[in-house]
Length: 166
Image 1: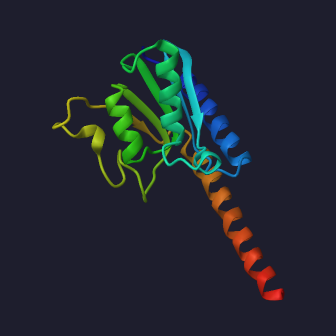
Image 2 (image 1 turned 60 degrees about the vertical axis):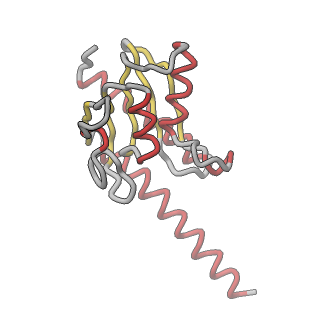
């Protein structure tokens, strides 16, 4: 199913809303939604800190929910919208789930496996390739992350100052 730019922005806004939920929980603000035939069938936001589980990335949680929703590990009719370029782990899950299209917001120069560091979705040696659209609502996605890490640094600086005063 081909989506209009308005529909894509709507679904990316839902992913941004998920990222804001992560931010409220003091998690790195990344959100994802999976869409099938115009309907959201899976959503997720980072929850690694809460559950102390490295696999609790937004994409992984959205994929798990989508698979449970349609009772299949094959998400061949779906699109994933995510606020940040997927990492190696999430890209592997996307490939294994046979998701044909990923739309993401901001590039990830430190861990991106789609465009920035690696191009896993284009690797012809794999049995599945993924169509990618990057940069949709990138500024909003990037700003959430910048604000989050600015707060993290401010809290660390405050703790350091507090310790000096004791």
